[in-house]
Image (cartoon, rainbow, N blue to C red; front, side, top):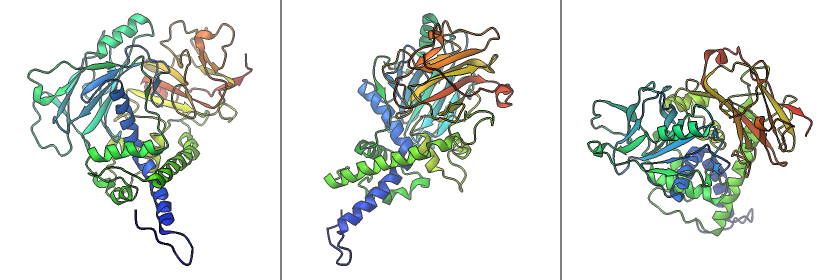
Length: 460
């Protein structure tokens, strides 16, 4: 920090002026660095659970509220291989063939959560299984025959693998867990005799990657800057980050006043992103309802192409998206699709103290399943201490109407006789609902099947 001087004309110290600059630049750093911090939060939770690089963290049963990641799917078993090529070189991610034992819907992203490629039936291997080879930045070495090369812009990356149970029954969930544990991760250098893959079960762990809007954000961002190479698209951030105390090869040691300024800036960045949150729901997926894919077309195109368009770098949209979600798919819509809403049929924000009904029309156009999940509007995570957080077409005992449709209910208490179709909420704060389609079919994209809005009903 420069030496303190005072302007005779203004009476403002140079330190005050510099801290104002730190505040402004720190707000921009939060927005720009959101996906990397989001990733680091995921990995640090693995470390706290006893895991390490080139191992797989997983949920051995359907997750409950203790999965405090951003908008997770509680109707699937997650397997996250966390990969680091910095010291070991290329790393193999082996995906098992899909079949009677199970299937994986998954993607591999770099640590900026930019899609490298999809895996499984909707990915490159098309369900046949395959050995994907994650390559470090600038790798020029030989790729052996039989491997699917996946060049990464970063040393750190991860797989977002969903092992799909045939239903929510205990037997089908156990079968999906066993199938997922056929995934293998090992350095290419040990391919002749691969070591056993280490799996870290976090089903009973509070696994948290919600975003901290305080000094911890910058501590996490500093960790990422120390490990990763500067991408050409981000070189303008080198001096900006240096001005707030984050510099490659140097410790992050802000003084007391700078810490306070950074924390204030993180809070202001949160307010800015929250104020813009409703933008992601415009335009809706269909004009007749308020459901929307919660990401802009420009951002999706950028994430799928590693920001190949030299005239586009939607960092605001990226920062917004990764404050409430993680991961990007290379081919969104082939394996899964998402519709999200924060308002009811009448345009009112969803209130956790109210009760809502969602009518799921008959014959949803999906090859696998659909699900509807409720999240805490403030954290974008599952509502804490709830019995369950979603209902899906795989939910045992889900009631259906005579025409094959289903009515789901979200609220503090269930309507009489409808507990199997009910998702509980705390009677305070706001909520948001995400509807997932796994294996979406053409009829959905042609909008021959439309999901209606949530309708508020009398509290029971």
